[in-house]
Image (cartoon, rainbow, N blue to C red; front, top):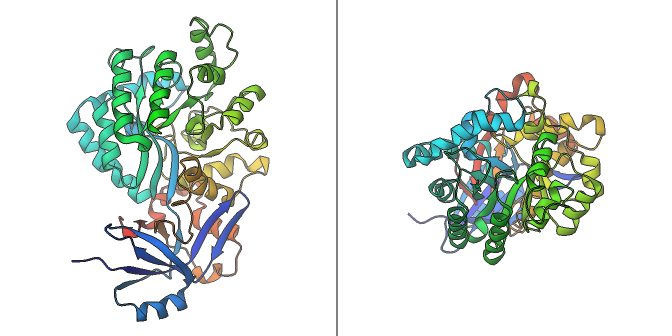
Length: 437
């Protein structure tokens, strides 16, 4: 059975533009046109529903999908998450390093089993689809098969990397430098810009491994992702370790460790970046390195986070550092970017710098800009992929004359005592015009 050439989607659009602007387009839908030779659709026209209905009547090959009772948004981009930590998301948390040693690393060791990995991939991919996350940056385990399965099996287009652990790691996860580099080279060569060179963090990865891996990434146009300055204890541990490495004796900061190891750059994403000096911020700005901010992970322990601290949004924006939002599961307890947006707005409430307009942008288009995919994803625009999420609002008729911020709050705001509603808010996930959920 051949696919229709056109899909007419009647709806109401919420479109991210920037931190300060979102478009609320009631009674406006999408005309999707099939890409020749592919089971994919792109946006041909964004138009009033009434006009789209008229156009549908004259087309020979068309499917009319009436979502006029729903609000449509772009799919989510989660810039930082660990798919192999899904099982520890809501386990008891203390400080970062204790939690890694006692909960995270033993769980990741399970992925040495191919059968276990296959089982987890199936269930986790379903969770991704249902939560509307179809792009972003994902950390796998040290195991090559777990990384390849994720790259080949996840819905959407998510960059994935195997964590590098060549020192200060448990015996059951540690790698030799040669084995680690061989795996990194193979996967980077095979998957190119869908792959991310992934030093777990400076504590577990030799500087020469990072340096050589960065060369693979540059050659193959791969991304680089790791963690930076999540806690003060982590920073001190890094400085203690690297003071003993030849050539690093005079390095004064965590960021300089990465700079000297050669991994900073336009395609590098640093998770967290909570405790950064002015000099470090200048280095990140100069090298165009991006940050993935993970509010649910950094949240107080009482909110199921690690209690790492508050992201300095004012200073990050002042230095014009590129950043976007991430769930950081399993340190972050929730996979849904709705939870992440709510946590971001709540934590930054006293600063006056965050609202649902900025959260919406940072959970979608901003991440795609960092992943260099904003020309095809992240917002509604003629020529972009026909991907979107479908949300069922309460009293849609009452929202028609509201501002974009008011509508966004009605769609995405979830009180803490009702957070389980987040995962049921998404009524449908469409990827390039094809319904996945």
